[in-house]
Amino acid sequence: MTSPLSPNANDVTTAVDFLQQQTQLEKEAEEVLPGKFDQCTFSLGYLHQPVYACLTCSQESRTTTDLTSEETAKVTRATLSPGQPAPAASRLTRLTEGLTLANVAGFCYSCSIACHADHEVIELFNKRHFRCDCGTTRLNGGCCQLEPNKGQVTNEENQYNHNFLARYCWCDTVYEPDVEERTMFQCAVCQDWFHDTCVGMLPENDDFEEYVCPECVEQYPKVFKRLYRLKEVTVGQVAQDTVHKVVRILGPQDLISLTTPTDQVAKPVGTTGYDLTTSPDVRSTKRQRVNPVDDKVKEEVGKCSLALHPVSGRLALFCQSGWRQKLCQCNDCYAQLKKYGLLFILEDDCPYEPEKDTETTKSIFELGMNQLFKMNKAEALDGIMAYNRFRDELKAYLAPFASDGRVVTEQDVRNFFEVSFC
Image (cartoon, rainbow, N blue to C red):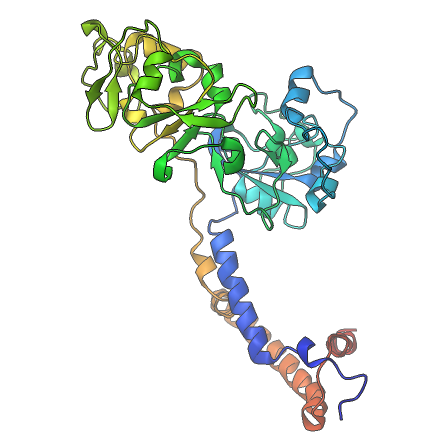
């Protein structure tokens, strides 16, 4: 009969189970942390790179700095609908309680591991033109372990939004990766993420690769409200009462009614695109691929190939592969993109990635053997002898458990180390 003090069979882990769990953990670590983390990206300047935020450090560096009205609007731009019950506070909600945009900071991939491994870190995904804040004045002088000499530096060009408070989308919801089941789309311009249920109606068969949110379309109408002529761009009409939710995918006739002059006639262009202009001066001209962008793009390349008249109303854009290469590059259009800081649309916009760490594909045993072979002979022999002593002592300690058929508990293991290393 099993003793009342015996461990529950469901709580027992065999040596084989433990080794299998260890192997699985190593595989997961390889997937989550594939790159080397021995160099901070600070010295590389402002980059398009993966960014992380540390809630532990943000709480420690909280100040009494008041938010500007603009910052407040970014954080609280969405609230619960009238009568909607407030959800139970999640763990991340509690961790961000009291934080404002004045308290947050962003770190590169390497610092998120090397400097904040035991902290509450959240992944913000890719951010453009961002320099690592670790060890800067943003955190009241908290030291960076990889590049410590930046305590007096302030990254003036970094921009922060509600993502740094673990919040996304117009609904301003805290993102809980372990429980979130909705699909999320990232805006190609502002890089915020939006729930599919908040985006609204999507193109047929979800046929798009990039999404431009209504706020960005509205902020840069001279750029985005003239892209409807491109066959790679599908236009969604946003309901005025929701400000952001797409309620209708616009076809050619819909676009005609929303542009001026209203007597334009839609003519097929390619297979799915439509030409909504009648003047020969604004017909599509041959466009050159821009990769990379340089001074040549500022030269005259023909008359503007975009629609002369923008579409009215609030819109969202769903863009297929190749839409960036089809953007007009005439002098006027290039000047608009440069004015609004949107030249990245024409450039190679791939984010910086740390060098792949080949060590992550090796097991802990293999890494240990590699380090052993790197030691000089005397150190290696001392290490092997110490290991053998440890092995013999552990075997002697566990022998009675094996002979009696007893389960080794956590406390038994702790007792062994307390006796052996005291």
